[in-house]
Image (cartoon, rainbow, N blue to C red; front, side, top):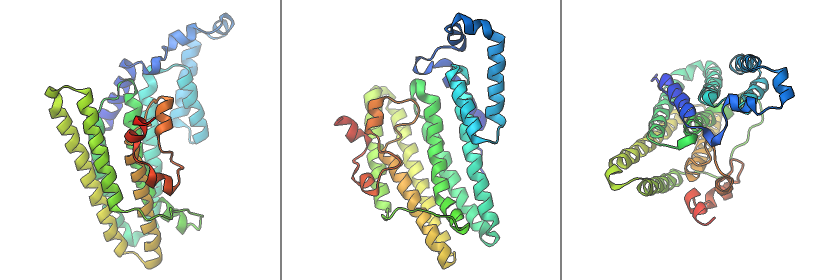
Length: 306
């Protein structure tokens, strides 16, 4: 299993939060000083810090997701700019750990397939590392920390989509799959359009003497694409070895994974981090129908006509 450089991720997120005052948010002291005289009388700066430390404890240690979410919102409202990187990084690690736990429960129920499923997970890990490499080449200014984690969470969402409904099916829970069959050609077309748009954006943002960076970014996305294809190809190998009833649900999970990837590609990694309302208006929603997904021409086209 490869190390995705969590220490590097944490440092990146913390620096992005420390040196880029996201969305012009005020510092903790500025927000504290803006409170009413009565509130300042009732809560000193030391009280404020103790309250913040208490919220951090809840956010980091609570096993109640609703409680942890409430603590996160309160930390944001307190203006903890320097903590944003740690908050979003903890969110990501918590989400990834939850999916990992679900995966371990799934393969524990299938010891006869454990080696094969673990080998497939390695293909996803290779893809996930490539997603990280692409994100590290990009600059999203004040929204960098949130964008960076958003990209990685999208990759974890794909991993979850690849097996989670099969896990639910085996627990006799209701599951829902898309009716449309999504194909490799759809993914290929969306990847090609995404790479073309990224190249154009790079050309518009940088001068000619920075084209080496554009080429490096271009190659990184193509490498991600290659590893995506390798992951999907290995799933076909896994499918052939499964019992018939299990194979059908597993193939449906593959189709759901491809649908999720197609939506991500057509949205061109927009909507991650802090965004404006007009950008949000151009995005394809996660709850869109299959027809809306197939008819959506891509974020850049919609934005241009907005």
